[in-house]
Amino acid sequence: MSNADRRRQVQNIASYANPLLPGLYAWVATVGYPATAPAATALSRLTAVAALGALIGGCAIAPRHPTWGRRIGVLAFIALSVATWLLSGPNPSGKLDPLSAALGTVGWVLFAFGWGSLRKLGSVPEDDPNVVMGPALRSRHHRAGEALPVLALSSAGAVLVLLLAWRTTRPTHALFAHSVALLCAIWLVSAGGSIATDTARRDRRSPFERIRAAAAPLVGLALLLSLGLLWVLYRA
Image 1 (tube, rainbow, N blue to C red):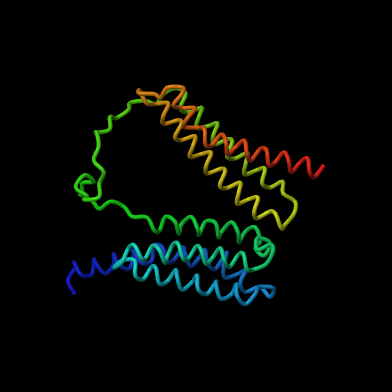
Image 2: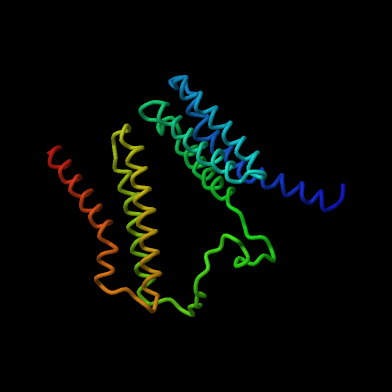
């Protein structure tokens, strides 16, 4: 076997192992362990095994068929894992001790990074046939002074939302509260990054354009606050 073939074989093994190993770790820590509990249903165990098969199958076919590999190894694996959690009982998070949950979170993060790909050394992005052509981006020597406070404020708001989720005392509602808090935190950080980037642009939008762009999120936020207020008044 030549050096080029040996190098190609090593690259194939690495591309197969990058998403597989952290995926197996995340599956064992957060999916397989709850599914083996005595209170787990037979259907949850079936979906757990199906999730493991989707992970292995997706990683196996990804080098030859990247699109289908990601659909099976990422989308189907996550969907079957969520189905396992929903079918494991009213409080699947209670079946995990804090250490296993934390280690499983690390496994899911590494699993997401494992499916990423780096640009090949020496390749030019503009030569890609799928590139979207546009005006050249000008480099910025410094950020606007108000960009950093905006990003810091959005990050602080995201941390506050995550901390508020821990105030949920009912075990049956804890998982839903943490899921909503995580989505809100991601939304806050993403919106803060967009606003911070926009403050550094020279061609800033007019106030009317800013209000119009924020209309949908503001309406959604007002609706959520109204529902929360009604719930508080109903519980009083």
